[in-house]
Image 1 (cartoon, each protein chain N blue to C red):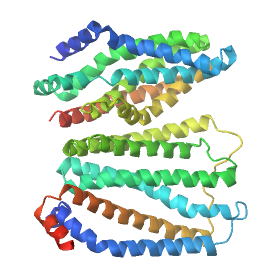
Image 2 (image 1 turned 30 degrees about the horizontal axis):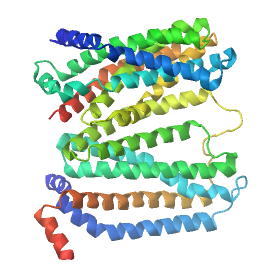
Image 3 (image 1 turned 135 degrees about the horizontal axis):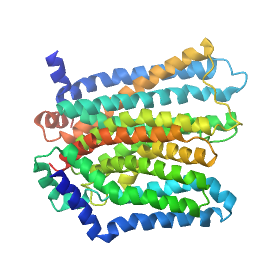
Image 4 (image 1 turned 45 degrees about the vertical axis):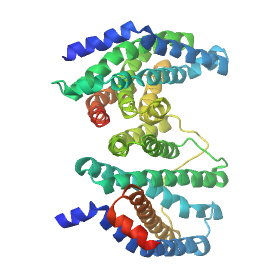
Length: 247
Length: 219
């Protein structure tokens, strides 16, 4: 148990392990996206009300799901870093903030593209969309704080970890209050009822896409953390050996 | 020790008039912009009065809190305070209290008058005062956290605003709805209770994070 724990604390071990896993995970990601998107875009039946435009859910929903799950991962990394001062956890936190911000942005953009044919407008101040926008701002806050403290990496890592943990307390409060706000100002024109039960022929490809998106998240995390290791540990002997060997 | 700290912070602000006057003048300036932008009609203005007043108060609080720890950090007093035989948590509480007394409190009182200028219905004015008093406590606590996060940055003002804005969302929502409910002759106890809940939660928990950040930053 402890050796396992120590492994995860070692950038050297992670660098090698991630390097060996990356090709496999990347291929699995592409495969799942291929199956999910191929099935969803070509095979799954057309929605009888929204026509073909509903097919954007095969990108929109996975991206939105993973951007939310990514925050939990980031918060866990933050807690681990604060408690055990694990360098890898800090690198994961930094990478997760950037990837999470990108995914949240993608979810907002795909939502807007979906909204245009479905509701007739690009943007609606709906509770879920507004919360997503707030989540994007929170992710960006962590990214920008890292950038601002770039010349003091030790301080940046701990300060950003605290900010990420404060976010976990705040996000439920913000979400609930935005829900409440929306229920007050319910516009009459657009009804955004919860997703009606989907037909399996539409739902199974969506599942594949969600799995693909999680795998993509894993791939990106490994890439980014490896890049972060390269940047920070470049003075260590083992990394110098690898870099020289590659040349 | 804590009493001395409170006294010191109050005295320092009093001696530097700019510190407590600026947010108030700023509040007045922002409120002036709304009639100019939206139009001076009583009907339009009273419709947006609650929101406009809250946005102005939110911005004024942000502006005021940004420098809360800056000077003590730069001249080294912050590192000395860390050596004091009092918990940093208590010290943060006292400093936020002192800050609230010289900014949150006057901002709340002034908003009452500005509500009149924006044609807020008279029966909503007392509710506005109570909501502001509660809301500015949360503003001060969360703003102190933001100020601590960006204290070591030479010019962290804009970043600090960006970090804190999402945290202010719930207060803004319930603050505005309390005033609007009162303006519409409804009971505003619901949102007021939630504002009080948020103020107590922020007062209990935010200084934990603020103290942790200050400790990291002053290392």
